[in-house]
Image (cartoon, one colour):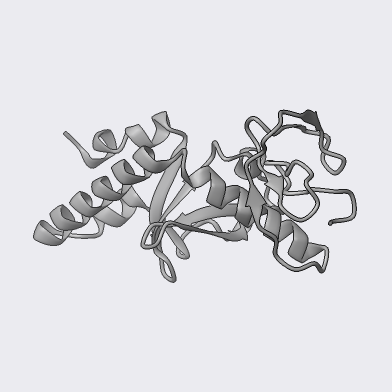
Length: 171
């Protein structure tokens, strides 16, 4: 079996995994709303696998040599180095897949605070809603639903999981 076939699960989960010179192992989850419609000029949100935190980068930066796809990276290694790195990569990938749902909270928090930062506002905490509501995001016009999305702890508005907006103009 080849390395490519071994990592076919990445495509099944709509994931990209690789090495970044600053953050080591990273994952791009294309299923996260902020990454679904990423374009050349937009930000993408990647997961730093060493501490399971999100960070953003420009989409146009997401290529070699800054980011190296796991298969290409493993092909540059030989013998035990390749085997050990492959084991580490599989372990990380399986761990991410098992904790993917609980990481949604961290993603929405990162996306929301990134949005607030663009508006010149300070970071806010987010909470899960107690009473169901659904609406449309005033900024990007995507649907928001607090049975799925979180709310801003400061203003109580549903946070859009596509753009990170809460109350119009920020809270």
